[in-house]
Image 1 (cartoon, protein in one colour):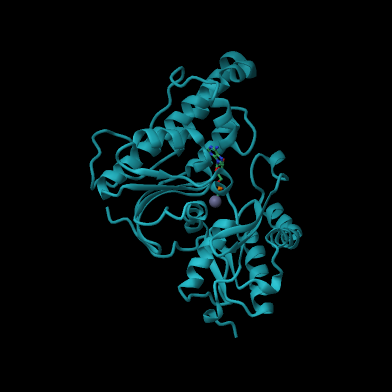
Image 2 (tube, helix red, strand yellow):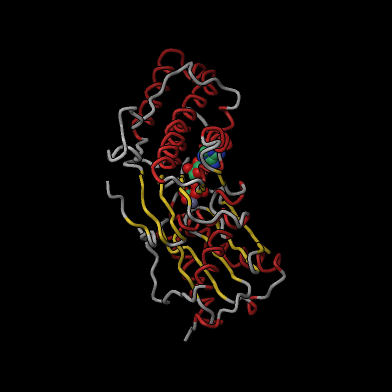
Length: 358
Ligand code: KG4
Ligand code: ZN
């Protein structure tokens, strides 16, 4: 059957279909030779991702997306030396499309296949463009489904430092954007509106950021965004009750600026705590929210002299297959491969992640 020792560092194909991006990438060595990301716009009118629509769209698009990535790389399917695909976490129907496609490809061509964890792939997004973004580092992973701080001692050896107790930060951006009357996805809309707004005109809470917290407290590095989301919804409701939609529209940029600063104050302060606690001099960002330029700016300012900050290029911050191919190549080079019985798992465990001990 398929033998991982056949991998000779030839072209690696990555496939990503965990949510609403259908993406394929070809890495030749460490060079990203082909990369296609097709964002599904069918969800916009629902104001959120509809899992069944996402899965059906992946199924329609996957062949074309892979063909285009191969063509861009100038590589034929037969020249691919190994294939990596997101096996979880994500939407089950969406994951199954990519996973089964990749298994079929690997089986038909007798090539090794690797199931990849979506959030670990977000870490590797940094390495695609910056080979020096290597462990040890503290990672701030911020997406639509996850908010985590972890300490990477080596690739595959991670210590969880803190995580959200309720909503992920990206989810809060998306939901708050909706209550403020912005479009979907909410993160980029809030960032855009905040550019012309003024934080401080309205006041929102900075959850779990008591100055009395100290290392060892379970709350020291954990996050919570549902209270901030509710406070933002109440504020929007009050404005509407007083002045209708016109008042909400007028306040939009200031609301966006205050919400963004509140969320970023917490992310930045907790990352700083993680740096101080671990003594680590490097931070890697990952996940869709790491595309936020204000977050990058705030972290660079706040950690100046303490840690170097790496963020993926914007196109590689949100979901993409280049990061999946990068993990796959790393694993294949280490002689690993996944069994073709591997199943998609919406709660796929983060490989090598030790739980938080506080
Ligand atoms: O990693 P990602 O593409 O998909 C998941 O794995 O969830 O992250 C998507 C999330 C969404 O919640 C989206 O609103 C947020 O990333 N996002 C942003 C920005 N761009 C995307 N949040 C804040 N500012 C942005 N510029
Ligand atoms: Zn993601």
